[in-house]
Image (tube, rainbow, N blue to C red):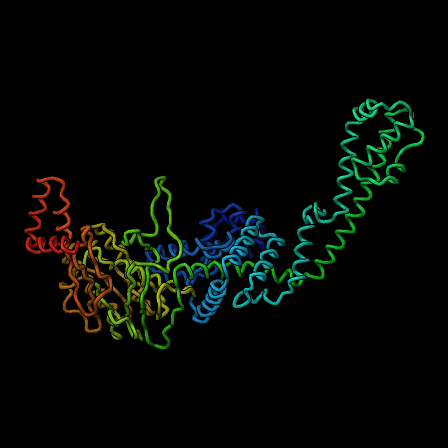
Length: 615
């Protein structure tokens, strides 16, 4: 295959890859999803990631039918990357794409959930040991030695199921010997490293001391003479004692190195040191060859185990990273709807991009720091107080929901979602989008239970407050064609009326709902125009989210759980009530009181009274 045949590889990129990697290595890197290889070759990491997504999962990427669907997909990958145990694992997560084969989805789910259960069973000390080993693996750029060390840490931690089975049966003692051999050998220089062999270290230390003496021979001679040495015999003995004390050389080595025909002290000292240097160099070479041979023999005997460990460590890092992501957000296995039936349903689903503030209110996971960079909240989500949602479309089997929650109907495939401002309608769309995307990627989903029909097209459209014909046309061009492809489509459309005038918006939205019903699509359409959509097709229903008032801090109280077959109402009186109460001066308050008259002053006053009473 030619490099230009890969998505995103043009003449300039091709030339760069061939120059840095060569054609065969470049193709291998693309086919294996090796982000690092392409980035090291000079491609921007983001571009490398996009190329690899298309190369390894092009059909899956085609499921993302709108730019908002692609943005939601990237947000999920960013959240998962936060839990990566290595940079390689992070790169591999970034190129995960929706899968088009249910067997592949199930297989990945099996691996991730097995890794999740194994990781959850470890104590803190074992987890820390594994993470430390992977940190060293990252620092050493994935060296063979670091990989074997990581495998040993996993063995010591006792993880032996799911994706960890690849190393579970390896003999620990043999792997430890191989790790010691890899640590001892400097593969780039073909040398034995320090601390690998005591005798070799002793010889090297002795040679270093001899070299230092040779460099300062005249000073050494003066020092010996200053100690009261007068004749040749005394000088010889003093020099011999100095060598034995400073070099750890044997007396035989020293005496054999001393010349018998030296003309003077300088000649005697220099000749001795030169001979010792030569003898020690020969001894070091001989010892190093012997030691290296022993370590290489150990590696040869352990080659199969080493290769198995090296191959497994990267795969384990990927599954372990995804397992940590699943644990952090309390994710579970989704059920895939079989046959011709179609459904998307969730029980107690949580939106991954929400966290809880200290006051119990919800905040977006991504926030901007003062320096303009993005920060993301993390941590254990088990104590999450953001209200979970139960919802369903199509032929689902949602039963046994909490008594306080109504089970969603199990018939209509399309719903119109109505209700209070800031009532969580958009968040519900995002949550369904996240569940469907994660399931399509073969990953656990943030819900107690979920049923999902894998779709051929995911149309997710966030609210865009741009009121012009160009935006309307581009939006219709993006959300209508997927309904015409003949495959299964999920429509998640938020406040379509924000991009055109209300009358036309109602007509167009009614048409979209009707088209979705006619094409057997699944869909949720968020709108404030429910009354203008009547009559809806009998296969579509209307759901509502309701605000319940203000708390003592004048914050909106909302029941985020939709009520089925019920029209939710916007609640401007609650917002106006808060504005009246918080007005900073008399003129401002008078203005808001005029609005209170417009929406119903008695309702506003009752709302304020209820808020004060609850305090």
